[in-house]
Length: 589
Ligand SMILES: Nc1ncnc2c1ncn2[C@@H]1O[C@H](COP(=O)(O)OP(=O)(O)OP(=O)(O)O)[C@@H](O)[C@H]1O
Image (cartoon, rainbow, N blue to C red):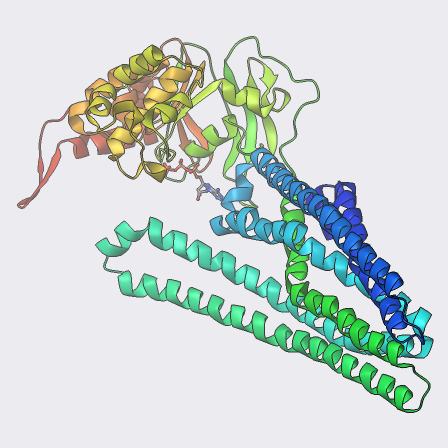
């Protein structure tokens, strides 16, 4: 099994060897002055004091400090360069892996989970690789050097020092076990608190509208309170064991001194050796105590590595070894069966649509229309049957290439916290200003964009929160127009456009879909009555297929839906209740 460092560094643990080696050398030079100190003490208690020799030793000490400074500088630079670059690579690897995962992975997880992993967990690891590395190396190196000095001076006392250190280890072990236990729980609670906070902020409009501020806030409040308790537990419970470890080390120093004093009083220990043990003993326990303080963070590294492994173990969508290029852009479903989990959502669905044709998907809510468009974009893979593009199985094309053939205009438009220009440019990153403006004009977006304070350079909030739903839709249509992809997937594209603009937008969409392979989901049947083919999906099955008039003549589900909508389109809501009005509505096909 790969250990935490291997998981985080993606097997490149060797990159850490250089800074570790530099810190070992640095610690050797940190330990060296004590050797000279011992010799100085020796000289001081010698029958004849050789001042020249003492000065030489002092000079040598200064030299070791100088070398210590130089090596320390290199070690510091190396550890920071290596640590930050390994962690940013780890983040990039994770990001790259996440990009290849099917949408199902994201839908099944709390949104805070990935954020916690990418930001907080990786920050812990970064801190260990950069700031704590020196302490960790010192905790191993310095005690070894100092114990070696002790062995040379007095093996019995050296043994006492080693035993006192060993006695404190069970406390260290206990704190590790407790951090693992409570740290894991804290991570879970942090994720759920993050998710509740996101939910609260995203849903604040509805929370206020339905006067749920008290109730929803209580959920958030409880979740934050749980986190508070978990943090306290994590700090206090393992903290008690860690304090026990540090106290045992402190006690170890006292025991060492007591034994040394005992030998000194008994005349078996000379003054210089006694003094040396006094100094070395103190220096011996310090790095171990510091390591005890750092140990919690190190434990977090393995928690972060476990979570990282969990994500990395998720199977990405298979990519073809030799990607094929379709000759044309006709889309076919051949006996496709699919379910998100165990429930089948689409069963044995077959249809095809050629370039220049418009295929409309209609059917009751939850019947599987959006699922069909999700499968074309390979957000999920089919369970059986296949989807082909120009006769080529979409799994043999490669997801990036496949997506480059498609423009999608969905119900829920997502805009990035960036300028309007950059949001439109997503459709074609190298587009010129003229192309952006032309696309925006066709999408009826240009006029409102130029009226914004900074025009195309206006920054819109995350998710497009600073502009209206209709404006967001128009920007997303401009984006799709700019991409000019051969396959267009429309899902209720005109859902949030105001009535005045609807006709204009439908004209824009007509331009967008001209000579393309078009699959459109429309709840308002009047928008797709001129479609080349309409298929009715009911409970995941194709139940009717044909042109508008043919389907009406069948007097099946389509006929019923049409009749219902016809009736509803004449309704108008007023204080007097629901009454009839005349509203023919527009069509983009
Ligand atoms: N990510 C998902 N995980 C699990 N089940 C899902 C997921 N997305 C959709 N479903 C389920 O699959 C079924 C079909 O959903 P789909 O969104 O395709 O329906 P739809 O016809 O587009 O509905 P609507 O017209 O309301 O948008 C529904 O029962 C829905 O609950």
